Amino acid sequence: MSKKINPINELASAELDAKLTENREKLLHLRLRKQTGQVEKTHELRILRKDIARLETARTAKNKKAAA
Image (cartoon, rainbow, N blue to C red; front, side, top):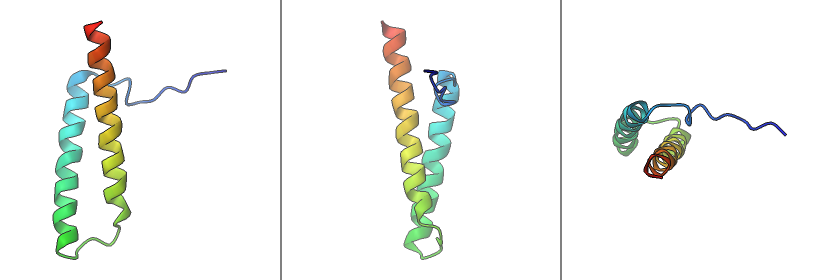
């Protein structure tokens, strides 16, 4: 059984932090646009939240691995 490689897990810590910052800014702007009724694709909010959670999980795993 082959293990599927997740591209998020291959990122360096600095890249993870940069992606997290970028996605959080996107989410903030999307939320503001949603409040003013300018968002047609509301599913993008959920996608961004899940991407942020994946990045946070990968960052936590890297930190635990580095500490061990």
